[in-house]
Image 1: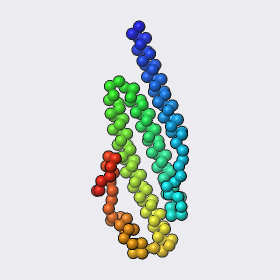
Image 2: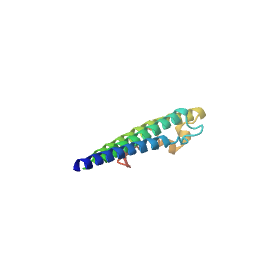
Image 3: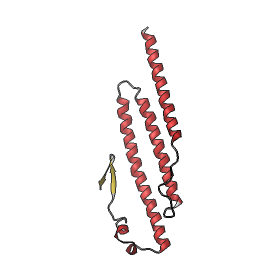
Image 4: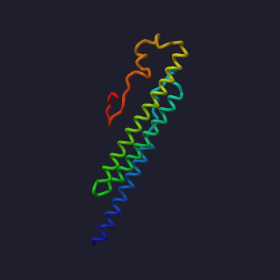
Amino acid sequence: MAGNTRYQVRARSIFSAAQALVLSLTLMACTTATESSFEGPDYSDDTRKLEKQMMAEAAALGTAQGVAGAAASMIPMGAGSLVTTTAGRAARDAMIIRHDKLMRAQIERDNAEFYKRYGITDADAGPAVADQSAGGPKRCARRGGVRRC
């Protein structure tokens, strides 16, 4: 009788893992493409393409975290959840930092093209644009928050 219970628990956990996998794949399929935050003539198609790529990477990371978390929750001791949570947070933070650098560089290219197109110099643009130059203040991500470097 005890052996039968063990197989029922194992079957139930396999069924739960399958449900979690189906749910996460369904959620991934349901994510719809939203309008770009960089619409209009001020931004290039490269910026919109980069944004779309970053959104796809973020969705893939979220799905992977969900699947890993569901699998880790099947471990009775709960140690797997600690590992997946820590690894997922580190991956997310690294992705945020990388995406921030890529997008800032792309926006700088778009701004340079815009200034070139209309013949605007940094002196013409004023102090707000001059502060965004390479020597200006930088921001570094730090565990979900932002701090000055």
